[in-house]
Amino acid sequence: MTLTLNTILRINNTLIQKEHNGTIYIVDPTTETIHTLNETASAIWRYLYKPRSIKNIIRLVTEEFDVGSERAKEDVIKFLTDYFNKNLLNVVKK
Image (tube, rainbow, N blue to C red; front, side):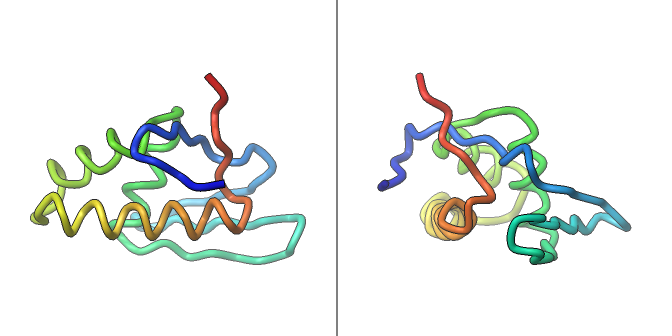
């Protein structure tokens, strides 16, 4: 599946996550893999505590961080596509 700017994503509810000193750690029990998120990735992950469109997440990143919209778009799409392909994120059906 190809993600678009209008795709609405949510966090896979089978994951275990902990936050410590602003860093989010995600455990995928199906693969027994631990993912450590940096500051920007942690912010994106927090935005996904409720389902959001990719377009909305890009807007939030440009508002919170000192980054241009094109760079934010590239980075957000790369992160979300990677985590979607790892089954850490699910598409919300309309």
